[in-house]
Amino acid sequence: AAVAQIDISTHSGVHPRVGAADVLPIVPLEDITLDECASIARDLGQCIWEELRVPVFLYEAAAKRTECVRLQNVRKLAAQGYAPDIGEGRHPTAGAIVVGARKFLVAWNINLRSQDLQAAREIARTIRESNGGLAAVKALGLPLETRGQVQISINLVDFELTPLHQVFHVVRKLARQRGIEIAGSELIGLIPQAALDASEGHDLQWENFYPNSVLETRLRNRNR
Image (tube, rainbow, N blue to C red; front, top):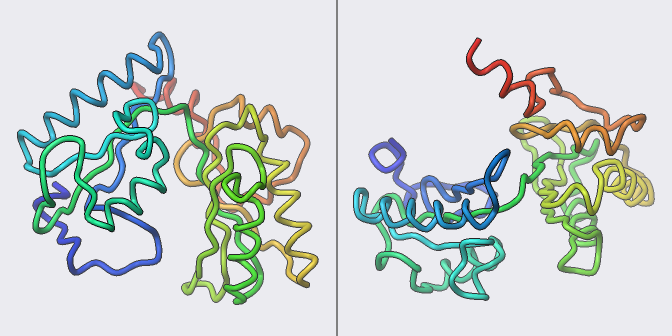
């Protein structure tokens, strides 16, 4: 559907992307290993190329090249015309896709009561693991124009290494140093119960948290 309906060449936005679907991770939930997920990801990538003619970059556990393990590296290389792992060139409207296998990632935004984009970017830069910040944290400072705010867009790639509340408290401290308060947190997608348990007792100022936001609850209810 994405290939048929989305023309990436006319798309504009602040979030990095390589194509209409951008990234497709295979995540082990139960009774399957990460290596098995990586094998599935490689097979899926081959099917995407053969059936849709969308070239594929492989990342994380499915990566074939060390420089393509990290998603942010793949996006940078793809923008520079780097060759895909499967297929060739770029689809004229759908671009490319990144397929791989990884542990469960918690994606969430911390919104700030400010329009200071430079401050948001400084905070994101400080907490990123790649800049010597918090382990397993990826972050970007982005404008939230619909609300007249800015946000720290966060991917926590291993909540066992760095719990959510640790990230939240560091962001709050850095924001307050700049005279800025946190407006709230937005969960993107689902979150495992273990990630919530690791931050039990800490107020993360959720704006959109519901019982069905918990991965295990969603799985239990999927056939009801």
